[in-house]
Image 1 (cartoon, rainbow, N blue to C red):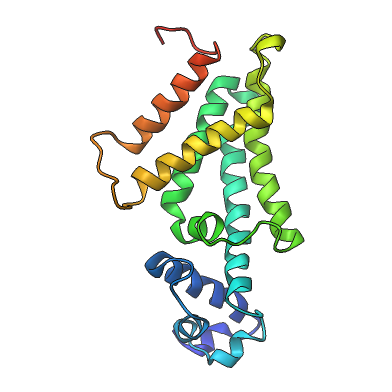
Image 2: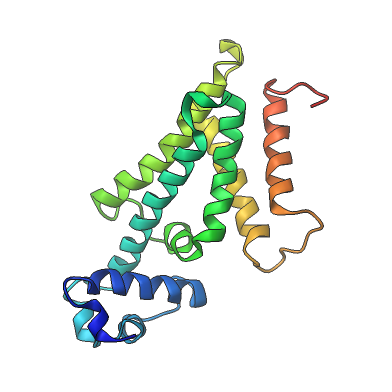
Length: 205
């Protein structure tokens, strides 16, 4: 990639784009800053004008990923135009869609070991995305008698864990991912079983 393409302040994003490709190819800890610089068409020294090290570069990729992710699940939630049940289910499916469409971002966010508290912007972006799923859980929880209602944070964490497990095991070609079921089927049935256990779906649905 030509250095010319990163004039006028574009080098920082060019390095993030290069890192995302390398993360997808080699994993978040499988590449060096020199490789990112080479892919961006600049010298390794140029990287340090924008990032203190590889961890800071990955944190920026994670930050951008969380912003994309929160926008996707916010649109999936959809507000008042959908039933609470449909909105909740679609936020779960949006997780799967994000992991497939943005694998480099996903890996930077969830597989790099970078803490969401690395910097305030990353912490805020990560909280924003988790808040959407929690809001969906709150809306759906209102249909459960109060004395049987789980905390919304626990409710959303369970679904988050289910989505993450389906992605990690069956949606990204990881070892041991062979199954006769499509990831969408696994996710939909898993969410259905969970919601049925809470009394939100009738036994025959």
